[in-house]
Length: 296
Image (cartoon, rainbow, N blue to C red; front, top):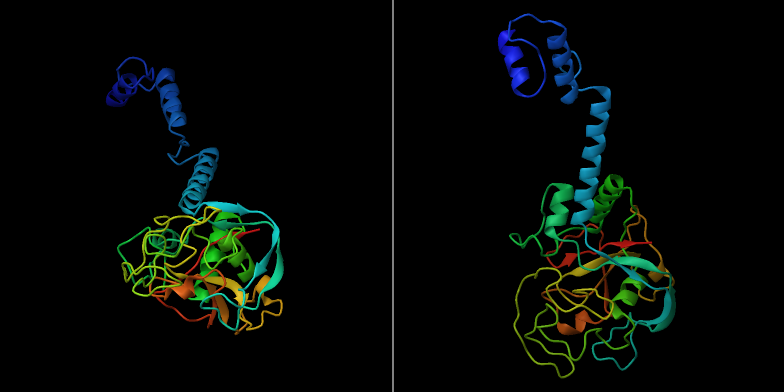
């Protein structure tokens, strides 16, 4: 007891004389020491301390998740011409031009990255590993649904994929041409197969892989890499004539093709146009396909 009394005195708890006798001052000092450490008489955490630790851990986890997510950009409600005009170079038959109303929503400033996927899911399915800030790819539409479910459970928020009208509206950012980037498409503005040209553009460097998100110029609404880098899944089922599918989300059990937008690192420049859309099976995984988050 003399050693314990001395130790208590040394760290500021008045245990009384160093005589080995557990008197009232010693008992009181022991109790104060336990209280200061949040311990019960058995040396365990008190219920209150345990509750505080759980609350702190939850806040820390939520803070980590929130800090790792892409910044969300508010997109104003509006009506726009979806699809492309008949004379647009590279136009496809599935780009019928028509007016669509889009409610206000939020969309990721960048595509979801490999780091963000790994932090939440514990793995990295990407083909182009070794670049934490590059977009996660090689994820199927169904894989993305699993990511969203886990993300929403852990954050209490409601993230989702954009529908195809939202995606094109945000990508256009008020512009009406093939691309929302200023001037002609080029390799210093987008990541694609720049061995090929579009409407008078110049040839450029073909990187042959993804690049870090946010590394190329943003469109007028502040969104990066909406043209190229990776195709981006939307929540919409593919319909060649649209037929209202552009403003809706398909259910997980729906076997219909899903719409992808934006083109990728290995696409020809015409595939990067704002109106370009493609249908793919929801189970397909490709090194040229990733996604970006949306919220109401």
